[in-house]
Image (cartoon, rainbow, N blue to C red; front, side, top):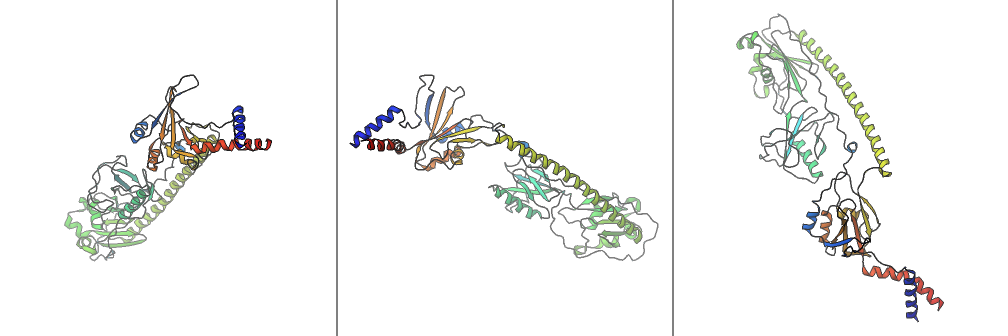
Length: 463
């Protein structure tokens, strides 16, 4: 009786045309207009490498979706000092009030400094050969002498290197900055040998004026700057003042620091050595004159304070203007992003797709990313991967038609050996590819039984 019932159910379903025919991939020759020639090829590492060579340019990432540049550093102009005038004679004993015992400390990086970084094969060569072999992340003395990428430290204290983004270095020593850069490399899962160096010192300076050959603003660098060497860097004593011996006997040096005035005879400064030498700091003003006029020094100090205040106001105005431009550009970028997301939702943006079919969690379109390629594994596991109990790991296919649509090649991945899944992570997708996961044979039978069961039950009730 059961056999007759089963045969009756099969006959009824077959007659109605509802018996389950599972989809699959087979080699076939195009014998009619309704068939496409299909060739099945087993995926191998060599075949994957060959397929990845096919020409494909991903849809680029829109410019407004990229990071906005940081606020650039603004350098305040150095105050202009008038050369002191006066015909007063120098007292025999100039009070020596210059500070003593200052110990040089490592240079700390600030806005306006220029950093150069070299890492073999990672950065474009935009600067000259810079390195002396003394700076490298592993502490050795074998840093590469090579071209480097250079960037100016921004007002925020960060520096924007390619591939690393913004790295905060403001207020750090060079060694501490190297550690920050190393952390940034590690965040990108990179650990190259690299070197960084400060190639231009623009964050700290002193001013040397008066009866020197070349009154100027001098940068403070990693090498400690003492008051005697600063005077020499400004050209030394003006030859019009007299011979060197005469100058030593008749000149006084005044140091303007913060709101204080320090002084000493020039000859006493030259006689200092070791820890007695006067170490200069950022913002110091050195005034060399042939007169000991405290009032004149005070007027220069007042001028320095006034100019500094004006510079701060000007600098703040510049920063406000930069911030305003930054805010406007940020708002424009946000609006552009919103418009882009709306167009993306309406599918009004050029986009490439791959199609998922068969025994996956959801048959759907997989959008290829902007600006880069995606792999077969990306598409498979975007939707949680193949269905565990129904999919056949031997028959995972990537279907790709040729340019004339005369033949379809089904590249088969046998994932029974999970090591072959590495091939899926290497195989790049192309627009209009179809990813198909075949069903287990037992799943096909279960589907047929599930269709037969209601009919069998009905037929049994009829009997």
